[in-house]
Amino acid sequence: MRSIKAIVVGSLVVIVVVLLMQLAYLFLAVAYNAYAKDYPFLNDIAGSFRYLIGIPVFIIIMFLGGYLTADIARKQVAIHGFLVGVLTASGMIIPTLENADLTMTGIVIFILSIVATTAGGLYWQKEINKIA
Image 1 (cartoon, rainbow, N blue to C red):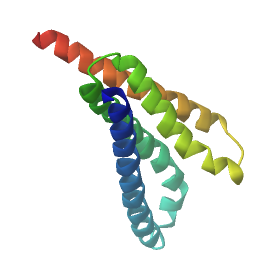
Image 2 (image 1 turned 180 degrees about the vertical axis):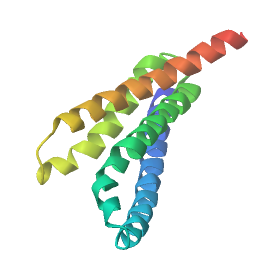
Image 3 (image 1 turned 60 degrees about the vertical axis):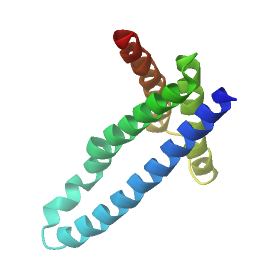
């Protein structure tokens, strides 16, 4: 039972925090576009923000989701982190495939998110082993 709870809670936390991140990004993008009207050179670097800010924040959220999952599961943390990574990354990428093709960036983000949640769980395990 603890295993299912860990996977459900970890997945829900990741999904909710990522949705909040997307909302914040939307607000920033609207403000940025309004500001870029006065400074046209800003339009050239707009796409870079998605990669320079969005992807690292997303990976950190996935890592924290794996950490939280491990804290709840307490056993087999790598497997639990991996499952949360697969569930949340799949839940985010599969709906986009209806209207778009899978890109190399999408594949890399998918793999990075699974690695990040697994690493979050393993980091939790390492910290617990230090304390014990």
